[in-house]
Image 1 (cartoon, rainbow, N blue to C red):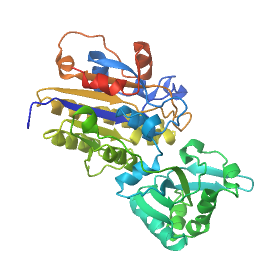
Image 2: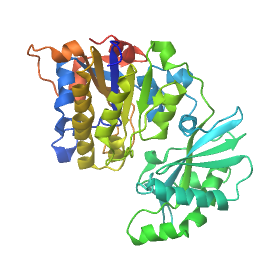
Image 3: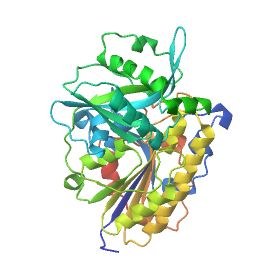
Image 4: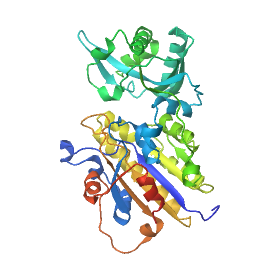
Length: 405
C-alpha cells in the first residue's frame, strides 16, 4: 500500500431502482435480487435516498451522476452531449454545440413512425462504426457540421453556430409514435435526422441485420445538445485524487471535466455482458496510489430500457457479487476506507425510461463494516430507503459519505 490515506469508492448501478412488478409478486428487482453485500452496507452503515435530479430538470444520467459527485447541475449542466464529447477528446470552441447522435431503429407505418429501439438493438461498436463512417462520407454535411464515432449506438455530432431547437431523448419514447415530432418541417435537427433514412435503409449491414431478425440501425437521432461546461476539479473541491471507471462516454466525460483519471477496463461494454469483476480489480489497483474511485455500471439501466426483468435482476446481482463484493474484500488491505453504492435514478421496467424521484443509496466505513455487534438486517431496496426517512440533496450525500467511518 502506498500510504495510509483513507480510500473511498462509489459504485453506481445505473437505473437499478424500480417500481413493484406484478411478475415479481409486486416486488422490485432490488427486492428480489440476491445482494448480500449491498444488504451489509445498508445494515451496518447508512441507508437512505438521494435526490439526484433537481426539481424541474430532466432525469438523465448526466444530471444524476453530476449530483452524486457533488456538483450542482442547475449551476454546471449545459447538456449531455458536451460531456460525452469531452470523453472522446473532442475540443469544443465557444461557438460549437455538441449533440448526442444515437443510432436508432424506427418502424415506418402508414400513419405513424414508432421508436422501436433507442440503441438499434444494442448494436456493436464495430457495426456502428461502419455505419457512422458511411454517413460521414455520404450525408453531404456542410462544413460547420461534423460527426464523431463513439461506442455502440452512442455518437457525437458537432454543429458550429447551431440553431436553438428543442430535441427529445429517444429512450423516453420507446414504442411510441413520433410522427408529430418528425413532421416538424421548421426544425433543422429533424431535417438532419431524415437525411439519414435512405442512406441507412439501403446499407448492406442493415439488410443483413434485418435478415437475422435484428433491429436495423435505420435512423440517426440527435438530442442532448449543449456547449462545453466549466467545472472545478474534484481534487480542488474535496482534496482527493481520483479516477473513474465506466463503459459509456457520458460518465467518462464527466470524470474528465472534473479531473478524474479515466481507468480503462478490458471488456467493459455498457451492457449486461460487461466485465463486472474487471472494474473492481482495476479500481483496487488504482487505489494503491490514489484516494478515490467512481465505478459506474450501465447494465441495469439498459435492462430497464429494454423491459428485461431477468436481465435487470442479473445485472444487480453481478454488481453485488463481482463489483461490490470484490471491492470490499480488496479494501481490507488498506488502513481505512468507505464504500457507497447507489442507483443514480429510477429506470422502471414499466416505463422503460428514467424517472426523477429520490433513489436509494447505502454507505459504510471500515469500522462499521468490521463491527461484530449484531445489527438489524436490512435489505438494500427502495422500501427500506424510504423507511429510513433520510433524503439528501445537492452535495449533502458526498459530504456525508466522506465523513463515513
